[in-house]
Image 1 (tube, rainbow, N blue to C red):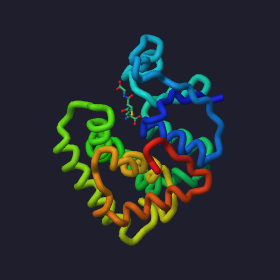
Image 2: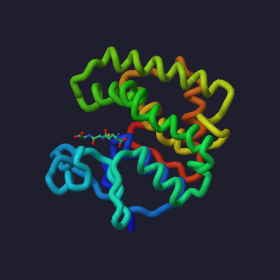
Image 3: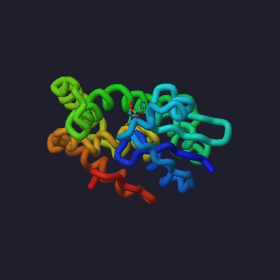
Image 4: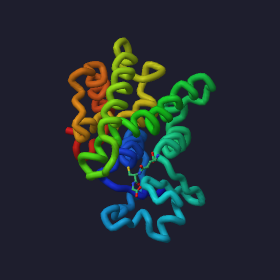
Length: 199
Ligand SMILES: N[C@@H](CCC(=O)N[C@@H](CS)C(=O)NCC(=O)O)C(=O)O
């Protein structure tokens, strides 16, 4: 069976658990003790030299980075539903995976790291970046239910966790009603699962 090296409170791990659930795919969840820096232990660094979670193992394959893992699971188990193979559609979905690890990571994800995990970083910059990406996504969602293709794809799954957890970084979603509606849409997907901090 596949193995996911996981931390419950990590939004990057959660997006993988969420897609596994939406796809109804079994996976062994292996907890990593991040408080004791297990992710930096020699045996873990063999899996991911960056010393980060999540990591997915499937037989001989070892994958790091939640976006890459979403791509793998979507294509392996989801047919064309979550990540289509048509070049234009694939690229439209993938642009949001990069938004998730650039603008969303440097915005709401960093703001949450700062307040919830006491990381010393430039919180004003994280709030500024959050405002600009949330404004852009709110506008994008003004006349559509999903980020691309008029249906849920891994574009939505990749961007969802740290936006839905924005309040833990002291970012209010009140100015972004279309983003709030989109969060509700995702929560209503069949087989949706939650994580600590989302309710
Ligand atoms: N781009 C990576 C980022 C992974 C990441 O930032 N992991 C964090 C937890 S969410 C981590 O492992 N932090 C512990 C550390 O760096 O020591 C992904 O999307 O998977």
